[in-house]
Image 1 (cartoon, chains in turn orange, purple):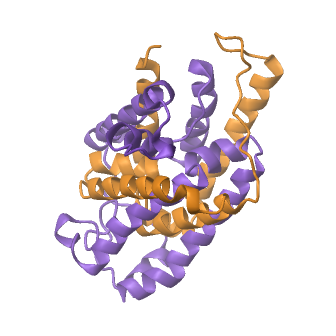
Image 2: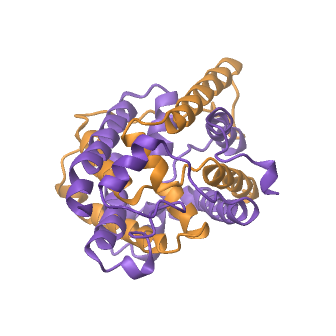
Length: 138
Length: 186
């Protein structure tokens, strides 16, 4: 499996995140204060574009090399606690750092090098979740 | 080069380009878009410590995503070198709100008063960078995804779990914005 196509696609994604200012703490503040359409326009059109693409891929019946249909795996909803609780914890951090995981990494390379500490701290957060996972409601 | 771009890149250009990452990853290798899984893969690679959550085969499951993330990092460096956003032109309402919070310098991608190495061990810097980063890593692992996996790919796929997660993202984000930041910054 060649990793090059993933690397190139990731490069394009990172480029767009910076040029569209999605990586900016100020843009995230503006979003959570509902004072600009910019971030909602980006997320909204991204969702619509991805949704139409998924419908097209499904209708065309495209399959991968192993013969499996191209599709996202459905996430089990269960009680929903993990999504609401985990989502809320992430949201608290998203507005503090002004960055979700992609932008967090992008910022290290785009002039806010102290975000390297936030990335290491995020790794510690994921590690702590792994440790506590058996005792958390899901 | 910077003349090639108006800043910000308009939402109606950036949004569809980001949305196309979802089908592109499926067409390349039937992979799901999601950045935060990489935190789990890195933990599994560096410090699995016998924890069940990190016992998966991270090379088999995560090499493609770590390659994607490496590309993202270099793409961000390229963007910043070729055409940096000198000033984020946020709305006047947000400018007034941030001044009211006590932030004076609104230049750059993030407030210099908080996001600088020299601020790391101040209360503001510690909470915004270290505590904030920790919550991002903990919360995305707990929720099984972040903005890319839930808010973009999951919502596009009409998954109820992702809608719950996005409700959580906003519950948390609004709490920080309207409750925590005023306490922290004033």
